[in-house]
Image (tube, helix red, strand yellow):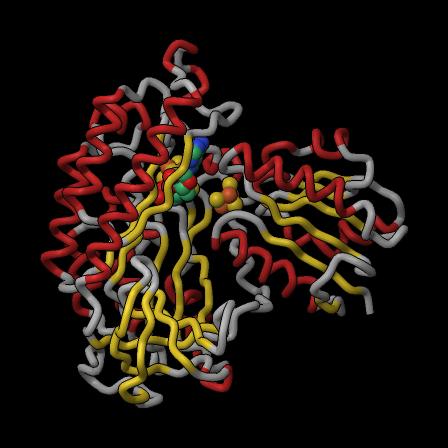
Length: 445
Ligand code: SAH
Ligand code: SF4
Ligand code: F3S
């Protein structure tokens, strides 16, 4: 049987796509391997979000030449493949396949062609493609990523995603529910619904509130999460569904990008600082104990010191539990690249702002976390921790908690007492195990 090795870069959507690719190939008799050496097919499922994401892949392609079997098929898939298309074939003679996110169904055929010596690009968008009949080969034994929407109809001026993933389209609610039932039947108890602006989900008849209620009610499911929502799509019915459905976890990853209305406007985020605060306020009012994390970009063209200080003050005002912070990266073809060159923020200024933001975010998270020590919460054991005889667990509000134990406990739920924190992650002591099936009203310890 031919073997395939897939290396995944970028966001959860890409992880989920890799699971679909592997599923497509498994159905054709391929087996997955965990190293490129000796594999018959090697695929890099790539990300294009920042320049750095792409330079890593270019470096990896060069490095792989040393490991590959002489007749191995090397393919580049995902967002960078979609963005660069045939340019990738021109720049690297070893690459024979370039396949965008809507082209994975044809993988077996394309690989056959590559085996015969063809070099091909498959980057047409297919607005009907949801890989409905493909059985994903899942990597994680505890939680399942379930895409509910592909593409994006927002046009944030810095962002390459609308170019690499095309227009927004949603799956039918019944299909998402069916997939959830299937993963629960396999013993996975947590589901993460995926979409670029996942709460704008609409299948023609049902919106995201309907989806949360339908998926959240699947028997045996214990935790329901979603990522990433857009602030403008948090309608009152969506927030009400989050508050009312027991399985929906008390955590929202709500990308803010900037705390300056002026910058937000040039980013075309379609909300102001105040509207973002209002969204946070409505979420927190409806969902007690809500964990809140975010994404922030520093150094967007034209960002002044004053704009940056508004981002710092917004971070303080909201009090995020954590944030992913990025230095602005100009992406070819995006509207931000057409802003006048004199608006570019110099590298040293970006670096200084980034470090200041990092310290601010960490300081706030540390204060919030230290106040939690001594509390009890429910955790799900996700995997073995990297060091020591510890297990890595996740609370409903998305805190990482390390507890002593062994890997037989992976997938189990416990009530733990938080015994300490580094400022970002916690240590915990098991108080008791939670019953295997959720009972009515059993979401709190
Ligand atoms: N669809 C998600 C974000 C996907 S990209 C959303 O809208 O929330 C993940 C994060 O990467 C974004 O939230 C943003 O903070 C960052 N990002 C996107 N494009 C970027 C760029 N050109 N430079 C730097 N960071 C970027
Ligand atoms: Fe990119 Fe904006 Fe769409 Fe998110 S909402 S994927 S940042 S264009
Ligand atoms: Fe990257 Fe594509 Fe995701 S650009 S962040 S892999 S949607």
